[in-house]
Length: 130
Length: 483
Image 1 (cartoon, rainbow over the protein chains, first blue to last red):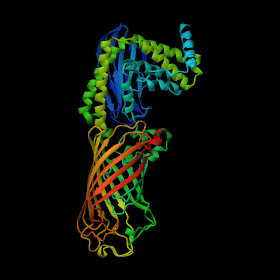
Image 2: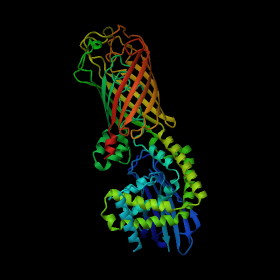
Image 3: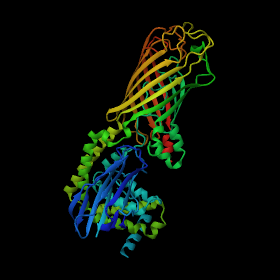
Image 4: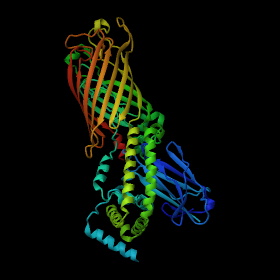
């Protein structure tokens, strides 16, 4: 997995399935501080050709899910948007750390959804698949 | 080359003008983070890029942005008990709130509620596990914010309170037949959180969580559509910011200048971004609906049920003459008092917390002429309204409370002397109504309660009574959190 820009990655088909972990840091533990995970959309030439739900496992507020290789061949982008909602009493340092890992265990550089000025904090992940 | 010229011209304009860029409100925190050298700059750029849609959507509505900011307050909870209980000689609480500070709290209160003799009580409240965990600088903030991962969850539920009566050591007329203790210690209590649903999973608040999840999914859809229309703007801002942070002026700039540089880049891109009017309005509507649903969810969680149990031990003064018909002979100490209390709180509607207390007090021993060790039972209920925020201070609260006490026998020792000659040997009923206004300061780190209490009688005197109480409490958790 190669990082092209922040939150944009070039991934080989052999590196799927990817594993995504979203973990709260410096939060109050309020259930209101949460991440809403968007569909995984398959895009080809800028057009959406398919989408899948992420099957999310929630263990004590730590969210994990997998991203399977795209069904269609050729050059495809997988795009996913995450919305982070932070309760009013969260500090500015509150964040959700996002860890992306290939099936072989290679990890992408860390990224995070930090407490935004206005809810929700948005992060768009893009995986370019050759 | 063109980019270098742009950066040079841009930087010179920032330095030359000295004028703060206007209009960046929706991305204020995101831009401020560029002044912190410990942050990953590439990730901060992605953060601005992915959140740019909010700034674009809010451009026509700056007033609403300001109102949203005013809602954001740290430590706005009203369910913490920092003062003494209603039975103390100095207390501003007819009804006890369910939670103690996460680390340490201090309160000084003057004016009794059910005790005959008013005094001043100093209460120290500590969470032993919280204190130990907060000693580690890396976890202090998390502990203060009740992050259960930061400290052992089982032990952080335990809190200890010690109260000291400052009038002990000096003898008042009403205490003429009691020898006051050399120590000012008056009460110690231990409290344990039995149930706290205010920090549990969304499943507990499914009724409010479901509409929020639906609105959030709708917002995701709308935002994804909007992202297509904003593709040029997001590419532009990413590219301009990458160029900026790679420039020589950036590397030599102070935090404040860096923030201004980023603000200027964002402002320029936002100004140049034109969205189809209908699409922008749709996203704006869904976004507001999502935030409304989120507020309802937050209120559901903040108002969920909390149940705590506490045990307190009180030691009365030594009698200087026979008390209660010789139950307590001169020179002996009346029996110690054990009290068990259950406190529960729930918010049935946003901004109203209802708290209930039930307690039973038992004497340590049954002496001759005492029918039983049972001393009293107390039932209390309080409705606490969170008022509008005082800008920069926090939210004041206005509460109304009723407390009923059934005194089964002479109170013995805990203010036994009556200065109007009435001796309580028979069963007694005490009704108390209290209204309390609590002013916050320092983001709720300091609170100043003022209360007015009306009672049909006190523990010793069968006459109606109107009293005022005042205090100041310090929730020192906020000091740890601000590290």
